[in-house]
Image 1 (cartoon, rainbow, N blue to C red):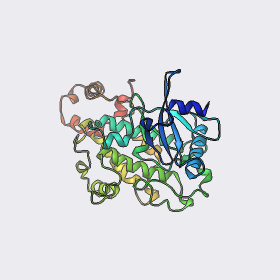
Image 2: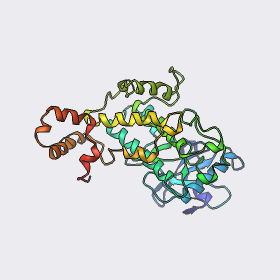
Image 3: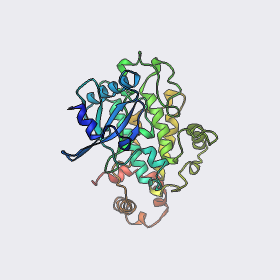
Image 4: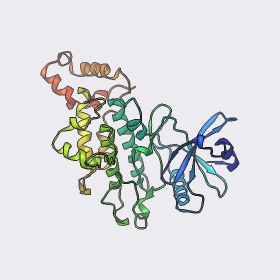
Length: 335
């Protein structure tokens, strides 16, 4: 963990200039910091409303959690802190914004391969936290806390509310409305299933591009809107209208994940899958984003099942609708 002088940060952010403000988390503001001598750009989190309030405690907690985690490609990289009482959190700069921005503000909606890739990367981030020793529960999983690096890989950020299961009996419930598990009403209700609920909400958000809470819609909750449609198997009404239904080769995977999302947001915690179960469905882990993925998969199907089934017979039609797992097709190839 690197230590920075406070005056270095002040200089790099131009005195925390509003022009360098790039976002606000649950407990602080995030600034872009340019270190000209090192030719480096980093992100700085500063607690809101000074250093003598609950937001500062959350910043301290985030520093503690991030500094205790081993490196992971799915977690926002932690660089260090300042070395005085004006504590600041220094992280890797994420230049491509958040999942919230991509789904709700971008003029170009993400493709189906990209949506599936994001869904898996977020699931792996949560799995990394839940399978740690001890397990860490994020408690604030939402699209605004999923950030993209320079190559558009998704990383989970904002650990101000994160807790270890060891402290579950003393931690008051917290989270974001629309994503927070309604079953999490008392400290003793804290579990990894709370994060699974939040992940289910984000999964619905990824596939529909609807906000978790939209007061202009009826119902306002994405869960109350999507789950009845999933139960009625009217999945085409959930898909983001800007891109339509998923391609045939991905349709089965998308459907499976939507059914999984409905289980994630179940009010019966025992019906929710573990995050490991969800990652097991992530059959697009090695599919690259771009126009070539369809032709590549057709070649793989041809190689695995023979020329006849690639010519459009009934068996191929059956398989192309998702009955063939991409994981099976990609088992013998690396990208």
